[in-house]
Image (tube, rainbow, N blue to C red):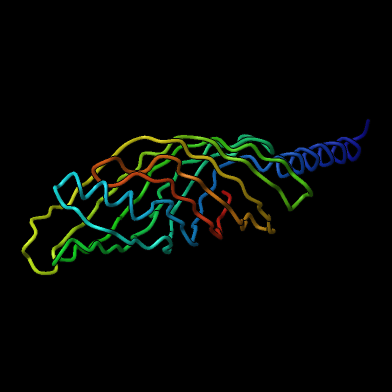
Length: 209
């Protein structure tokens, strides 16, 4: 085999290897998410949290807010990735009528998560994914009395809960991708703050390295 043939064969093999690696999409990635969150808590759930402070009231609470977050991970191949992230789950305003006084505040939540992603490529650019993992959630229940006559205090809680999700991604040339996703945080808060599930519906953009 002459030198030109050897060079041609080496070029073909290297090109094939590069294409195979590109199709696997293996490597590190990072992204940003923005969307809307949906709180599953009812006014009666919040009444229970305030009752632990000796406050008998009737509460209403907002159920949606803007969420945003950052994430990063490693894609092992076309079908599996591991991902860590931080997410602002939302600041949900509430108001509770307590006799001659009104208690106002916010239910604030955020999360740190670690999850595995199962990925199914539909085309070279489009993929769908499912997500499952754990989230460490932190909640602050801010409270203040409108008249100052009712003694209230802010409460907080941190704990672990299940995270599941699903979505669709589109890969552009150059390593840029975008996604539409849904994430479900199953256990946020406790009896002192009010306990609820939170759903996120978001659009994301990221880069593969």
